[in-house]
Amino acid sequence: MITKQLAEEIVAQTMIRLNRNLNVMDINGMILASGEAERIEKIHEAAAQVATTGEALWVTEEDLAAWHGVKAGVNMPIFFQEKLVGVIGITGNPEELKEISTLVQLTTEMMVHQSLVTSHIEWNRKRNELIFDELTSGNPLSAAVHERISQMEIDSTTSFVTLLFELKKSSSSRRIIEQLESHFKDQTVVTGHSQLHEIFLLVKSDESAKLEKKLSSLLYILQQTGSIRIGVGVAVDSIFDVRNSYLAARNALDFGKPDQPLIYFKDVELMALLKRNPTAELNKFTNRILAGLNDSLCQTLIMYFKCNKNSAETASCLNIHRHTLSYRLKKIHDVTGLNPSDFQDAVVIHLALTLRD
Image 1 (cartoon, rainbow, N blue to C red):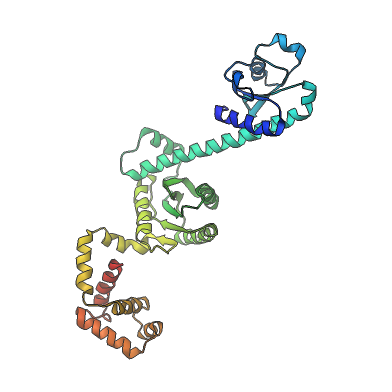
Image 2 (cartoon, rainbow, N blue to C red; image 1 turned 90 degrees about the vertical axis):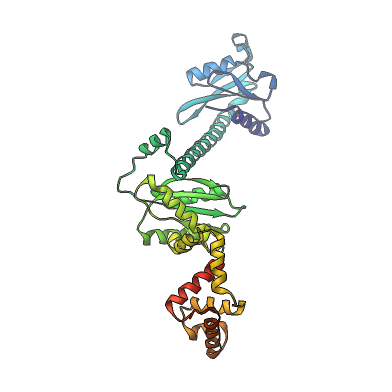
């Protein structure tokens, strides 16, 4: 049905262009909005008849005696998806209104359609946000959410993965949600806002290679409109296990590098496990391992591990002689007691450097 707010918008927008008084009535004939404020919330008998018959009604000056609360003009039904949702009336001489009446009726129905469709979409998204919030809360699901999930008719063999999209404040979230739903089409289960500048998308899981390909192409599209980061959770075999996928996607964003646009949980899993420990304990570990190493030696180690312990490549990247690199690695061994060239020692040093950052 037409709301009072929508009726007021129709009257305001149409009267600017028409320069005539308009009334918008509900299906009972009550005036919701009018260019003549004193008529609002009064019954318009001609509109009530239009609501009953579904046909336009022309009222001349000679007809006024037969109607209460009516002025000369035309009253026309407003339909949405073949259902009568209200009546619009234009005040004036019927002869002068014939040329514009149909246009006004069509324009009004277009405004109603746009408003009601948008409202329906927003309502669906709010419902989806409620479903996702309950699925990821760790608490028992309400009867309403259980009912909604049963209506989805999800195949028992379907697996799911959660995607989290971290937006810049200037990004248009509505537009991005539309792009996400379009990109994943029939795979989308629910989507909406998980936080103010964050969108969730729960999709039916693809094979890993297909999902990675889709996400790469999606990232390219989204980055045209601004900075964005995507956290990818793990696949789960039941919609009731979505919390595990969500927490994995959350960890991907939390522990991925700030400038990394696409982060899979599998790439940060070890870091997530380690950094969930108390900060004080982690600081003790990093301070103990890295004590005595200056910034130059730490940067040497970072590049050494980045080059997969290849001495020639590391020296080239640091723009130093290979003997200089060997000297630095020996000094690191002497200071820490750990040999960066040894696998076991390299793992410990690498973890300390990573946790320090």
